[in-house]
Image (cartoon, rainbow, N blue to C red; front, side, top):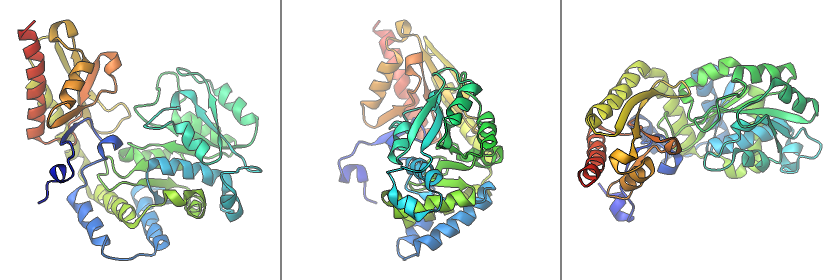
Length: 376
């Protein structure tokens, strides 16, 4: 088989970071890849294909309907557009000029994350105006009510992500309650929360957006689940600003196959396997002076854990930033999960790793830390 790293002069990567868009998503499972490959040989009516996807999304999540977009980011923008236009084709064709439509989107300031681009930019791309409420570590219900009372609100946008601030933010359930009191829809960016889709729908979110290419292990795509009239309005955006965000057959077929696989998957066994790999990391790195190890559950409640590494630089000879850099600047490049480096710790996310890769990663870390101590 062709070695794509060599053919295109690319850097070999071991992914110890997790399901990251920057690292090209996930390794696509064979059960999904085979179905996607088969689809490449045929033509489909994309509207009919989206309808089939909607049925599967509904069965998998309990939502009224669903559809597939190019990615989660596209899904956010198209969902906001849908809440402004409804199913009026005239409104769809008018965007991004939202004159005469409700065009304000309320979002807690602690949810105004940058996931690779600012989420407030997703709002503006639809022709809407982001209305940030609260401060970065606290939102009061009165601030949300005040923003709504000013009028012309199209939707409330919430974010379930490790990027978002948790301290002091109003919980999703409360935001849904406030929104529905005012007959407003709640859009939820749940890009990496596909394992919680059903529960997020049950909370009452009107549109939930997740990635097909993270824990669902599919080709790149965004999966939307929610109320049928809003899903219909999202699909209508393909005749307007959503034209450049449309999903192709490989994305739709991949999402369908991934959701069908998920419905038959033994999630408990999958969780046990991820916990085993996190434990293997800890066992392979134990006994290094200045290195503190622990296993942390996913902060958003998904059913897996990660190994946390906390370094004492004076003993280890490097800090977490230097360790991350040295691990990446080698062959193969090993990418650690450094989201919390400024807090003094990093993670090894072993979900996309096999045991040989875990051993190689841990041996390299041990070599860096112990060699620095030997020469200190």
